[in-house]
Length: 351
Image 1 (cartoon, rainbow, N blue to C red):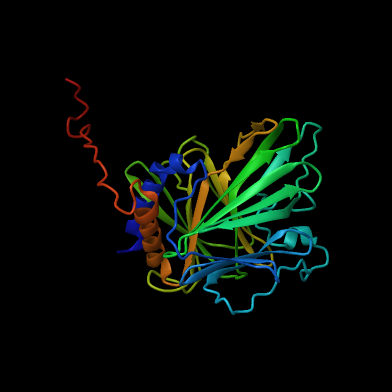
Image 2 (cartoon, rainbow, N blue to C red):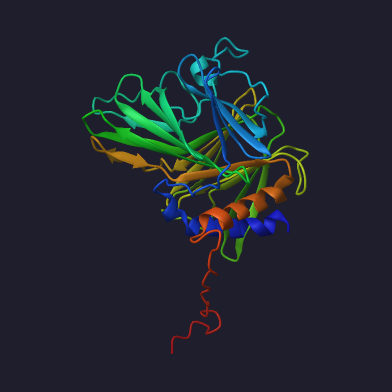
């Protein structure tokens, strides 16, 4: 089946179940999930039979993305996370390091995952690793701001069959005073450096729903969003990124969908050195969430995966995940009810 015919079904299903996902409780995974922490290198490795997602803790205490692509074997050498320096000495390393969940602070100039406003007007947020725990198929990583008691818990789960990751975050206020959350993402995804990426997204209108849009990516920012307070066919919280030689049946594809039925935004950002980052969560437009002392804000779940089987295989992997993990009663879900739409047949005649 061609991916263009599959994506609409995918997005309709994710939208329908978005309210279930807002509590950030990801679906249970089967036994055998590969989540490893390599203590000597301070690396986290989440793997399925065909894909791996690897990030580490660098010397500054930042969570740094290292690999998202084909499977990394347990005995493969993955370089440890290091701050390093980019080709230009004018770029601060706080902005060039591909952070897993960057806060708006410390000379970070990209799209932040978290932006806060404190009562004294300060808006600087610099997150550092504190601790982690692994329980079965799930990983929790605790971060904390370097100067104030704001904590962020990052949640990861990898489906062992499809390699699709479910990521979300919880922002906790332990400062003793209320603060305002101006921007909160579920996740930020870092892709390998390349200059031939193509972005696929979904948009539409009445009688022209679910159109697949394709565009070549270049340094700059592309924003996919809805400000309507709900999802709909105008724009859908879904993306796929492929290389120039990828097609329906072969080639690398990174894909994802945000399980949220309110206003949302996905930012696709490529820097001048062709590093690509995709950040998605609540739409920060007209958004200011008052977080009381001792309270927490949960983000939606952002699902994403990787395949070398082209756009068609990306569709099939997401469908399999939904049928096996997300639908109520999965993997033995009941048939979904069908609503008969009669308004056109009766020609608006209410008699």
